[in-house]
Length: 216
Image (cartoon, rainbow, N blue to C red):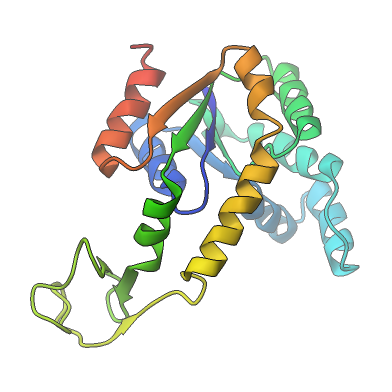
């Protein structure tokens, strides 16, 4: 089973990919993580990528597809792959098709987590965590039981991510729309696109994705 997870930042792609890894043994393939791992491991494509990045240039589609190819050849992708953040363009979509075909694999589904932009802004900008143990909270949906005290460890120190502000979040959403808008029609035409309610509870989103993968 090879799937693409689509959705703007904060839609919950990472959470759902982690669940699929744990429950189905699939491998989450995030291009950023793969690039860093390939450079660190010194793979043939990783060496090329490092030279390009050291020169301050953007890594080409060919290099990225080479890294994805190397990653697909690793044993942990045998039960399936979840593509997160790739492809973003029509050219990358073609390269991915070729990479899978070379390995006797195909893309099964493109699952879009559909979100309400204003609600997502509220979800992201309101979140904060305990600086000590990392427990997550939210201004509106999940405040500590005792104001200013972490429910789990009792710490009084909390933090917010600096980029969890409305302006940054809306910019990231606009970028997502601009980048993914071109590839959705390609996959729609092939009947691969399925949509789930990204604003639902995490377990409900997981159940919707599971139903798609199980062909229900």
